[in-house]
Amino acid sequence: MKFQIEQAVEILAQTPETVKSLLGNLSDDWVENAESSENWSPFDVVGHLIHGEETDWIPRAEIILAQNENPMFEAFDRFAQFEKSKGKTLNELLEMFAALRAKNMARLQEMNLTEEKLQLKGTHPELGEVTLEQLLATWTVHDLTHIRQIVTILARKYAENVGVWKEYLSILQ
Amino acid sequence: MKFQIEQAVEILAQTPETVKSLLGNLSDDWVENAESSENWSPFDVVGHLIHGEETDWIPRAEIILAQNENPMFEAFDRFAQFEKSKGKTLNELLEMFAALRAKNMARLQEMNLTEEKLQLKGTHPELGEVTLEQLLATWTVHDLTHIRQIVTILARKYAENVGVWKEYLSILQ
Image (cartoon, rainbow over all chains, first blue to last red):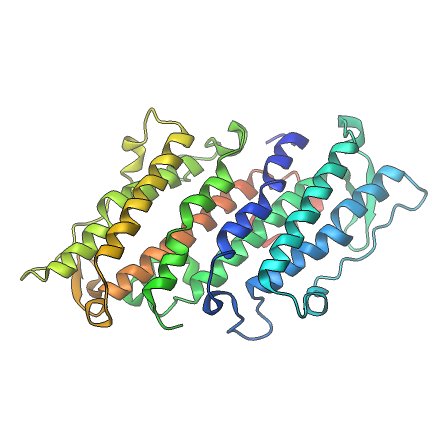
């Protein structure tokens, strides 16, 4: 599928509503972390999405568009949410994520991205040279990855309750 | 996590909105089936969820609650949607699914399910004896499985567009 910014935005703009639909009405048993601390809870996932809005996607796009001599991204802290989300409720995080994403969609719009701009490059600290188009495609897939993570976490809460059906349900393997 | 019908309903009642949030605003490139016919498109997944509402979950619950001599379920046709959905649009399917699910949530409510009723048993044609509780937990996990399938299908449309980021994105493996 050829990358088109309008189509990436169709997904990106929708993610806060999807995540809120999944998590916004759930009781604590569903969303609290009953697994080991190595496994993220839905709360941790939303905190991670917020940190991405603040420090990853748009800041990296701006580094690429600035076309400075050394367009090196800062490393993304994949565990920052464990500190940053402390003391907040899940619903507060869902609202924060929605507000930040809406602001970032507006910033993306203001960038007036053309085919040429999408091929501009930046430097990822581990992966090396990447284009703006690849960054925006990755942002989109990253959203979908974490929606997938959330539904997997929820499903596994019922891993034993399904009884013999377990063998039919790939999400529980 | 102990099974509680109210908590299963928190997820079940929400699924149509979640699926609509994911798919309702997408252009055709996202939702059409570009993969082989063995792989389902989002359109096929929603058709499958509709067929489940009509022939699987509630009809099986009713077989269990009737407590007839032979509480054997009919086999579920996992491919019925390929015929049944023909000629419909994705948005028509999303509306149908939402209406059927709302009706089935009302029927579930009318069943006044107690702890005792949840332990009543039916016979699955392949898996053998199962309880009503297991059926309802499976319905819930089945929803989450198909949300997971939808986001995986969408993400894979961008499998090449993400460039070197691919190795970081488990959903693309």
